[in-house]
Image 1 (cartoon, rainbow, N blue to C red):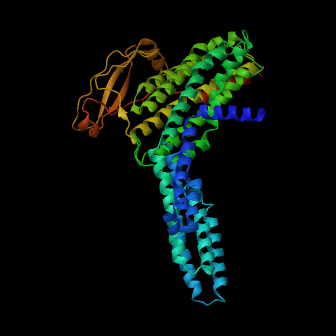
Image 2 (cartoon, rainbow, N blue to C red):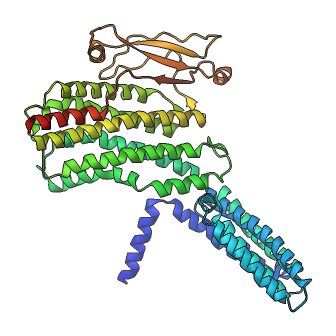
Image 3 (spheres, rainbow, N blue to C red):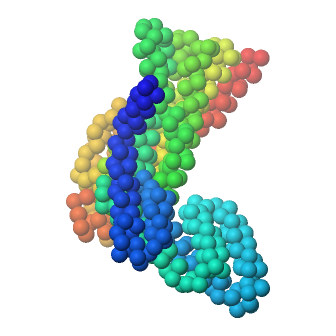
Length: 504
């Protein structure tokens, strides 16, 4: 009785995790009940006989959770059955010309050759990714038809019935999968990447609070819950195989919603690869929260403001990208936060070069500069992720969000005074908008060049897509903000090495 209750609890848990699983179970049952009519209905059984069981077998092995997986397997099975059936009949006919003595020998040779070659081809990476199941069915069908033909007189009739039942079973799966509560692999991949962006942004926005306010005071359960919530980023580290599988299935799917047939699924994998690189840095950062060797707060305080801005602005940038991806719109909001994080990064490098950590012990200095270096890497990766998301938005033809006369809100470190309205040019599609910055950012940027100017500014290149202007003249294609601040992690490590060497 206890085991039954445990099974019921497990079933409820699985159903709550994804209610679509319950719907999928009913869909498979519907497909099997439909193709079973070939066996139950006498006129259909008279036409197909025992070969009707192939329709049932096809449903069992072809019907998958998503439309892309079902369609891919169905096409693979149908094409493989057709090609293998034709070759099997040809091999049987060729072997039969040699006489009853040589015929079984030739058939055995044909089966050996095709099985060996097909099995070897299955090791090819591209073939294994998309056509592995089709080649497996090819080997099975060729062998069954060529061998069955040796004892079966009506080989053509056998091949025809088997192919017909396989196609009918596959078509039933595809139609039910598409028209009855469809599950799209492309939509799942899109949502997964957006969710991963949001997960990493959550860590970066919460990291500084844990790092500078690190304490185990209070309710132990609350502390553990907060730490566990902070470690959600680990799901990004283990999502590679799932992402590649979804991208492979999505290529088979027809157009649905805003996802075109040749949607740039490969670009999603490019964004995912950068997210994993960022997640590895975050994993290293997280280890410093749990480390027994903690740096005193008075030492952290020296770099607190810059580190907070770097982490917070990078997190906000990833959050904006996640929102933009979920809504499938082009947005440059994330670029502003990237600029802010790079400005904070430059300020931090200036502080480190000024010798603010000269009185810090070497071991503590190593720990602190390692944390700083990891955050700088994350800032640089955030910029790359932003560029990759922009490429995805352009390739996927996301809707434009920014308007020509839209004004950007004032951020923590950059205030937008005014922006010139882009004017249509006949000579070029690029326009430049001058964005005025406030004194603190201008001084930060200009000091790195050896001069001070309150009137410093950034230039934002606005590229207008002519095709969009034809249909929606009130929208701007895309905005790319190019930062004039950058920071190299090697500067941090070099200053740390010099400090340690001098102490020795």
